[in-house]
Image (tube, rainbow, N blue to C red; front, side, top):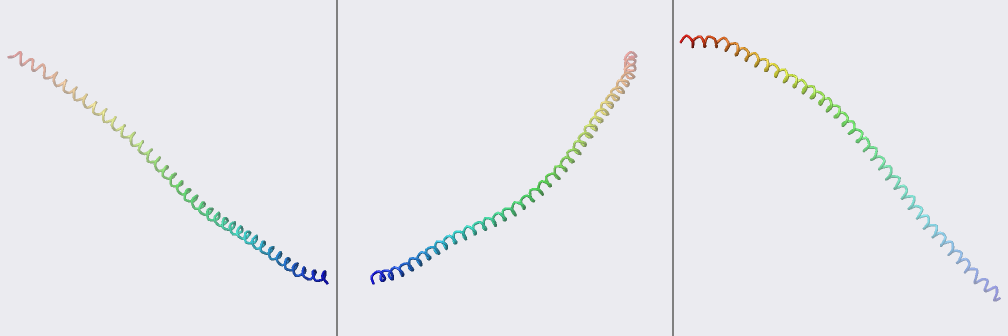
Length: 132
């Protein structure tokens, strides 16, 4: 009877141990599942963050391209203005040069007239001197 009794004692122990093992395995699996779930969540979060960043990047790139276009337009306008300025500058120099020449010619003509007048005046002056 002793061996049968001991066998009866070990059977519930085995069942209990088996249940304990199953529970432990389930617990471990639950923990592993929870960890995997967290990892999946983290990955999903990262993917969402990446999508947001990609969207931001596209928006910034569009802004940058617009600014680049504006800069190119402004450069075009500026170079056009600069060329016109240079042209006006050239014309101004030409006008100044023409004026200088005209003034020089005027001065020359005036001094020639003056010397002619003095040439005419000189003999009469010398004559009038000699008469007295």
